[in-house]
Amino acid sequence: MNPETLPTISRTDLDAVIDKPLEFIFLFVEKYYHLISSDPSGQIQQQFTLDQNILMAFSAFDDQVSNGGFIQLIENGYGTYIFDSPLSEYLNEWGAIETARIIDEARVIYHHKKEILEREKTLEEFAKLYQEHKDFEVLEDQYDKIITAERAIIKDHIKQNINRFAIIS
Image (tube, rainbow, N blue to C red):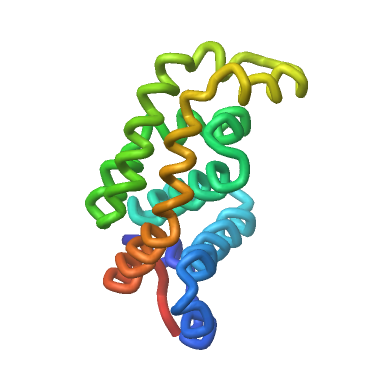
């Protein structure tokens, strides 16, 4: 583990979000993005731990699906990043089994329709995807129902393994 890739988070900042799983997770991810943006060589993310990369992928997944669904996630270029990665496997290991299951089910749909979903399109064509490809709606509804509990599980995993995610000062 490279200590240069572990950001320092103050105990005060951590305590301020300890009962807010979304903000807790975002505190870590925000520090990771700060490290990335302050690295002129662009190499630091390659040195991130697996845990850091999984947390960043989960954060991107959560943000995209919570704010625009799977169609938005794919349109914004996260399809391969989420569905061709070990994200669901590790979330399952962390205890977020429902999120992992939803990602696995969405992966099947994504790969079945990847060519259509990832082709260049106008804003109007993008908007039509929501009407033409409703396959993801059930999964999005399921995600809406479980995400609060799943974020708490991920927060607890981070707390139990804090030294794999940050240095607390």
